[in-house]
Image (cartoon, rainbow over all chains, first blue to last red; front, side, top):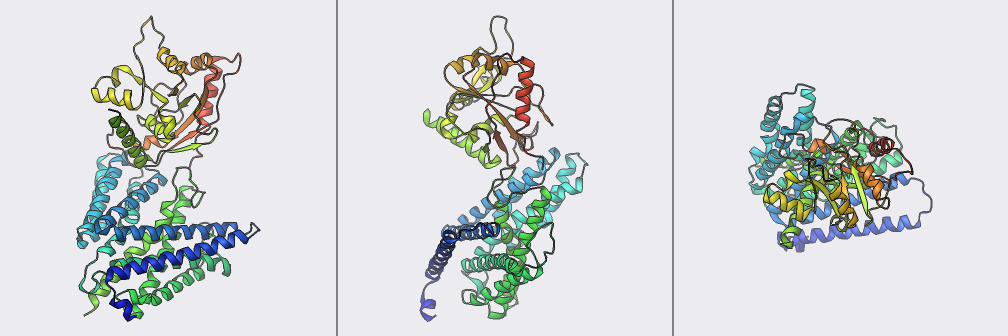
Length: 324
Length: 207
């Protein structure tokens, strides 16, 4: 431990990445070996899901590494692009009308870049209220000016919801990287790592435990595998991993455990909500298959992060300000 | 000059992919370097760009759009873009008595190029495509060796509705169907109706 502490922050982060990619490589090899040995085609659905989660983990780790290597500007840009792609997929799924065109332009080309600009400039007060307050007011105003009263509330709600999840939620991840408070200085990369690991753990454990527990699903029409017990198992696993990782965070053990549990639980709920949304939009194919719209499922992958990041971000800020 | 042309081509296809995804779904035929006439539904000015961006790089060079001469040669930039980047085939919109309007298309086909045509002749905004014009039939009759590929372009009208300038980023697809042939002795109207049905059949199930 002392040897670790004597390293600079940069070296600590580099070591972190080394461990992360090493672990991922080991797990991937294990899964590959298993799939080579397995003869029967049973459980192919869950198997495919496991593979999907593993791949998402790889992508997440690579993105995280890129974000760290490229510094604040790169991280902001990178997540800005992810937001753009996720929002594009979301808007494709939720059938808008012709008169929404100007609102969509506002969402994509004004709200999204500005939100990431606030992140890059570290103006976190504006960042926190920009989309929930100002864009929330601007979109229906613009929409009303377009002069189409058909399903007015529904259309505006859809666009606002997409912005909240794909832009506002996701932008909290680079914000964590740039968060500067006296106690959290230069811990950004560790915080993002903590968040991603915790959210991914919750996701995978929930998936596995729903396979073993075989509980009655809570909402059969939305997701056949989601049950309260599996969800709690995911959150509990996230808490354990959070407690184990406490040394890379500025937190004490108990708060770290609590924050990890909350982030994990909200991440899995995010995935669940996204399933409901896709069912509503009539998307049958799941995962990497291109659906009717050509959407390749980026939304599924970032959904847990979109839901977990804001909760985590505020927990961290709150913790930092509560400390004397 | 060729560098500018290449850069412009890359830029156009990059923007098209960024905004629409420009996904090509090859349902009825693989993307091969055969001589083909792609015929598609027409909803927006972006239709051509979408098909072009959905094609593999090596097919783009030999696949040409049809452009109205009076409009697309009016400005220097428009002329350069359609001539150098897209290799457009220019047609006259005003009919003159001594010239067959299909002549430029036939020249291009004899030259071995593939074409993309929108047989409705005009953009239709909602629902089913309008009845097809007879040009497709005459080309099929004259060039029996050229494959006729129906294409359905989905979602483009949401990207850029009529009268808007800035496109909204929404994913679009171009679905390519199985080659169609003119049956011996087939009636013009029957063939055009069959071709139209083949395009409509490619429409993805309504979500």
